[in-house]
View (cartoon, rainbow, N blue to C red):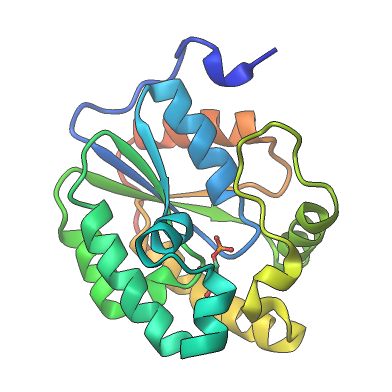
Length: 204
Ligand code: S3P
């Protein structure tokens, strides 16, 4: 059964939002959740890393290896600005996108844009990345990266330091935070749609 083709029974996004942006660390499920959410809504889906790759003709690890992280961040900001010009779109950010002030301003100042933080503990995220590396979902259409294709996971301690530094940034940026630790993809989508229909919670 192709669950992507199921009707949008409860998928109601408040009418004032034309862009839903998924943020969170590597392994948060941004691409998996985003693709299914977009299908449910009948919206387009865009994975920012895949968009960078299509714009440059280079894989993300190759950009890191050949040009370094700073150059990747420039390409990422340009791709983000371009992606945010679109409407009726679910956009999955890269894990590091919100670290850059320009990107946060773009996200905050683009009208009708709601950012959703998919949260989970570091150990859970690393487990998910490892699982993705060894068991790519069959026929899911999901862009699954092998672990070695995430250059910033090579050093686990450094990755955890990044996670701890980024978590408050993700939280402050997002209109809603969903703790995905015990949730399936379906449950995550249901939870974020409920949260989007509630008044925004205080950030912190
Ligand atoms: C990065 C996360 C990756 C990708 C790049 C850098 C990061 O995206 O943008 O490897 O800085 O956390 P995912 O979060 O989609 O894996």
